[in-house]
Length: 336
Image (cartoon, rainbow, N blue to C red; front, side, top):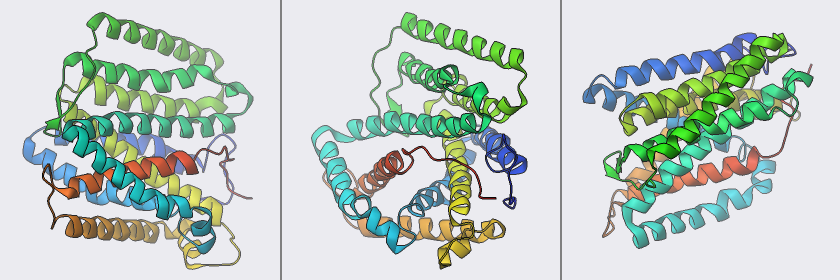
């Protein structure tokens, strides 16, 4: 991970080198690993395991660096940290008890699609604000960010998929003609977006346009190109996890740059300690999920192992925390 510069270029969030890693590097990683995983069942299992331990678990752990890294943050977010988890776990268990694995798996697939899209929207808006006037109130890019996942979701529904990760899945019955309408609308908006980008030739819009394009590519590959719904999901999951880790690390560096008073976490969140930050997230994520599996794995429910409910509840809790902590509009730049 590159060192964070003291001053960033005006059109990049954190500097050209870091941003290209966030946009191009993460996309390349997802496409390569997802492509390797699609070659065989054995490779898929291996890549999935690596994704869980090296990206997914640390990415969930990194969420808590935003809400629980010091006493002030814990006091500010105590509802999210202590009151919300039992409610989410209870709701997840009740949903599964009442409607079975079908409802649980359907909620997960649908919610994670929305969650990934919202992350892209948030980062795209950060780039748009850095670009300034050329992209102020950029509704065209916002439409694209939402339309491609929507088209992908409807495409999966029209394909008639009824399983996801070997568990039952419900997707609405979508007639082909309706998918074609959404697809045509999406492609028309994309054509207008490309025309605008080529016509303006505004250098300040380049980082934003690159990010939006990366979102389009990964959504297209994950939901439209890949025939298998589970294999396709792995592409965008790797992309989302790696991107989130980098983005949160950079946000923490920005927040703790020249922080006073100095704490262990502010020391950790310095540009040249990125590797140690990654190790801490890896260890915390691994310990948490190992402990979760050890505790819940010893008990079984009459429908399915409690460990599955526990893992899903952690995902849902993470989605809710993200919806709260990233909702406020903030300037994304380092102090000079």
